Length: 278
Length: 278
Image (cartoon, rainbow over all chains, first blue to last red; front, side, top):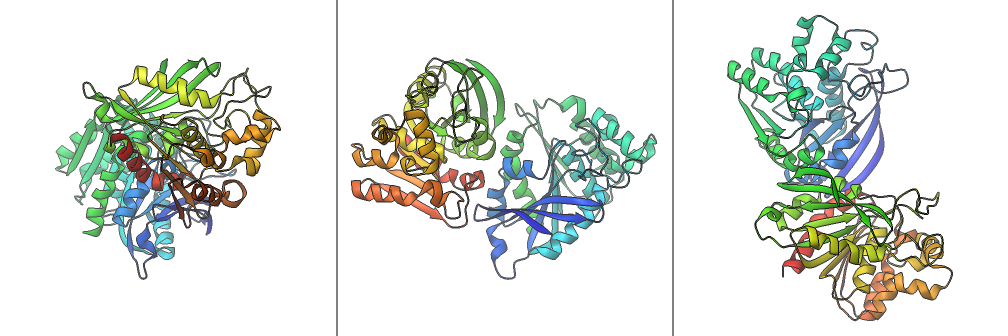
């Protein structure tokens, strides 16, 4: 594991590491924000995992969301991985919404994707194991994300009961099986059998969830992808059917950009901090 | 004047406008953050002008500094212009530190720059006149900036007594006449007569200043340009010689990036708010 960026930020350090991922079979970057509290002897801080959206790398969130201020206030480590496996020998697609930059946080079963595209296992298992070995963190984990990464956060929390103490999402793709982004990705990564899709669809998973981890979801009311790709009302209906706790907030005027994420990330970090420190 | 971006952010709007600049003889973009208070009937809010550094456009500050949160808290409009004239018929240079993206906030006198490179007059006069005509603002103006833009903020405040009520800078080029970035730019824009350079050098201007506007300057202690290009000790010496109020803070560990700016922009906005609302 090699540290490739190291920048003082709000009294802590915004770092980026590169390491060889066994799960993904490629080199990967991930960002880690270490708040000032991480420097205290014997510190064991909770960790919030952040999953970014289509086209993003580990950079977008750390440069645009302004989360470090809140992480420093609450004493939370924030880990932001890249959004897919990377490299010349990793399958790709000319579209922005498939292949590199668009891993959808699942384990692909179809060729040419199955070899490298195992972002679920990477984010849920390999990356936390690495983080918990090398940084002053506890096993209190939260997860959040934006758009495709909001889908990832919901799916990872729902598929892995007990692994996360808190979950939230910004403008998530809540029902990928029912919208173009998800249908394209699932067809490529998982094949045409829609039964297999259910295991990676937050609305489907919610109906079977045994854990009742409360969901916090923020959505811009003027998001350009609201009706075509996001459709939060499907999550609301699934949560109501399942009796699953969901706090869904629609914010008039806000769009799909990081200006929206930045405006509410402080509230999300407070939400995670309450659960992770509680 | 055409609005080309309009994004909800911290209860207000992060907008970008394009207009024809008479002073610069080209189309220019500028960003304006309108905090929630701007929507109140009869609002007349103070304005902070932000000047960015080499290679930047109006985008860097608004996407990376996280200033909107603090501007919303304090009810301040923040205007961030581009860093030079732009366009195919505007002179340029292959270097990142001269020509487009590197206007140095002065009025050039040498060819091929003199026609368009008049960023001082644009920022000090044309842009505020436009802003004060079209937005709900008062004539209470502050100015700040980063690196080349920190130089710009100091020089504009020192050259225009009475025009700004507050000034601050992050990692400014305090003595462009004495460092490579400034010497290259001044030689091109102003020619070889060093006497002309004195009018655009904060350390020189400080020695003649009649107004005693307190300067707030933050500098990263691990800034990669600290000794080669920035040399804040020269500003400190000039301020001591002139009896000019200066609060210079060196922050160990911080570099030249927007992670540094983001970490302290809240304190700068509070500093400006106190002066602008006082």
